[in-house]
Length: 154
Image (tube, rainbow, N blue to C red; front, top):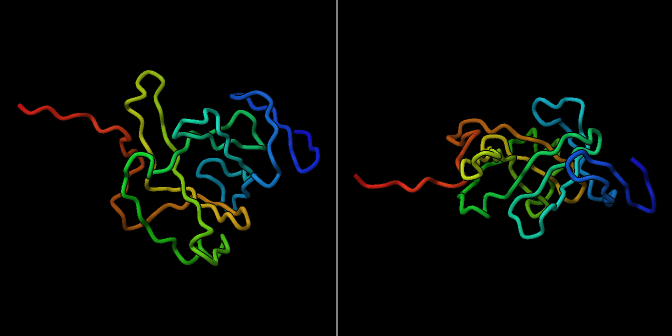
């Protein structure tokens, strides 16, 4: 990782060398589940017209999660941020919040893609603090299908 004029060069395993703005790095106040030592990430727009982006670690160049917004897929998605998490993220205004979700896209069957609705990534855009929040008392699933299979009538 090299630095220059408010920008950082990273050499990712998936995308090669990239130059990113330091201001685009999110600081996870609590790490993503299972990745306890990694707290710095940025969003990579690999294909401009795609509804998917990549949440790339800037500490582990081999780690990138595919992510998306529920709205791209017509998913009605609403939840309340618990008070403790709201304090950790230092949220003052709901307009400062950006929410996206980690997806799983099988290479062998992209139509079988799922989205994790149970544990969204919440970012305070004002201070770049972020965290994955595990929702409680909800029917949201870890593997919600992105593309509903057409049902045939018998």
